[in-house]
Image 1 (cartoon, rainbow, N blue to C red):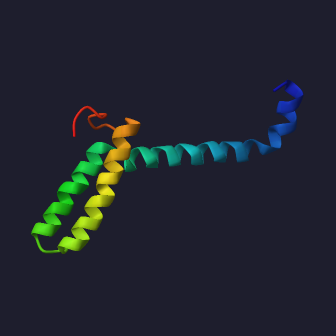
Image 2: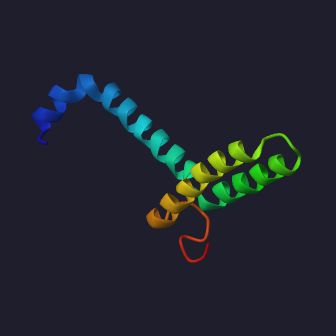
Length: 88
């Protein structure tokens, strides 16, 4: 964009900056949500809850399926700080 375009868009700079910041927050939230290491830790906590009797088998199965779906997506994306799809 040329100089005139930049001058005309100057009043919208705060909006563009806010949009960029929101995009960064969403990207980081997705990275953390699909982090294989975090999903594996949640799976371990879920199993502990089952063993402690805090949840029943049906609830465990439902939550485990959700976490395994997240882990599968993370492995296909290659996101996070986990093994990046090398092992399960």
